[in-house]
Amino acid sequence: MMMAVVAAAAMLLLATGPAMLPSHAQHSPVNANAANCNCVIIRVDDIQDYWKQKPQIALLDIFINDSASLSVGMVMNHFGSDPVIVNKVKEGGSLFEYGIHGWDHVDYATLSAPQQQETISKAQAKMESVMGRSAKVFLPPYNGFDTNTLIAIKLSGLEIISASKADANPYAPANDTLGIMHMPQSTTYGFTGSDGRSHQWRTIEEMKSAVDADIDARGWAVVTIHPQDFATYDENGKMLDLADRERLDTFKAFMQQLREEGKTLATFERAVQTMNRE
Image 1: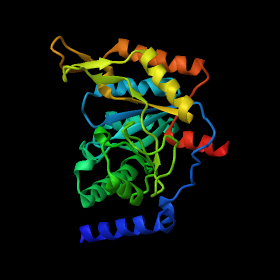
Image 2: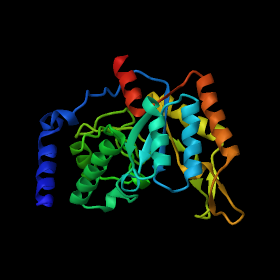
Image 3: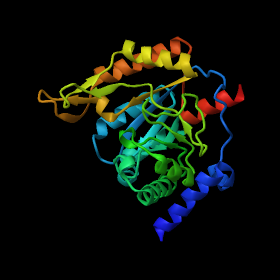
Image 4: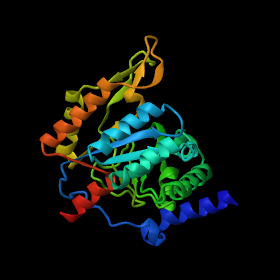
């Protein structure tokens, strides 16, 4: 039955477009030539219960203490039971935009259409139950998605997807045929080393270069961070449940430089609203 329902919904979406969707799933269209908001969206992926609490808390505190906007991507099957993490996200209040980073941390392009619809729907329902408001942003684990993902997020009331630059949709934000806005990341702070195991970090200069290029090209930029980027590693490369003050200070300095250059730290939704107003 579930498969038949999803298939029917998918056919309706592809055949009729966004106008036939329920009102909660619609949004104002975004002009590909909308005004330059000169803004940087920072998204944090992998927020979840009990795992590496100290690095998670430390990175969230950067934004809370600095009154800076952040898009928080939560793995919803593993979020909601840990009061330390849940309360810290809630502490961010209106500064924090809630994003779904999957139900489980899996590549959504490997899941069937019914699996995607079921898990994204469950994630949205749990977001509303635990956090008191729904998400508008989907941050796919491993940046993996396909057409079935777009249909599933549309049916669950999400409006924006942020993946990698491999996303073939225009850097606008521009609506695709389903009305989903695509706002891919510009760069990441941390990354896996060439050995496939070690955790490495980009310099402030490297991140700023990517940010400047994307703001020049499309009016906004997206920087992705993870709790792993702010953790301490032992001599064998094992990640510890301990925050790394040097990494925290480096990223705070990066944020400060952006502001000194007149750039605004924004959420995805606020960036879109700013460009639609101007």
